Length: 157
Image 1 (cartoon, rainbow, N blue to C red):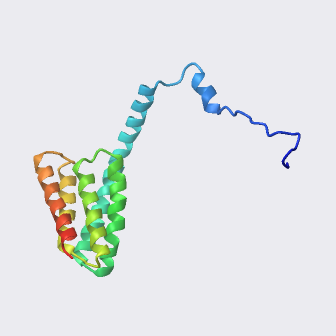
Image 2: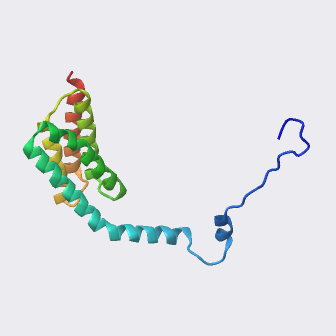
Image 3: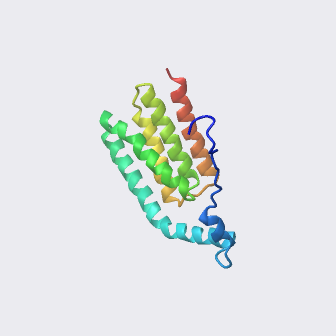
């Protein structure tokens, strides 16, 4: 249409189908839906823990090899683990794997390769898996130690 046309634009209000479905009687209440979602997550937890275990095993193998090519693989594996760990209740595991991501990101950006610091992180991940994701004072002390490694890398030019 051109300016001055006699057919003005018309607006249509679209009502999503979900709006009608919400108003129907029956169905689940919010609390019931959340409980069902939690139950579905619990069903997947065992396979998620198995995936975390396999990821830690891959990291352990890379750490044993200590190759420059292997170092480039640490971050993607750790990021994948963080994605899974963040979705489930893994407490200190998520924080430790996130710290490993930070560490390898900073090392890579500075062109360095510090397998010793990576090894400490991987050993922490293994310990957290072994203890069933316990989040007590020992885990917090371990996470503080991992954070200090990351800060040391930041401070080193």
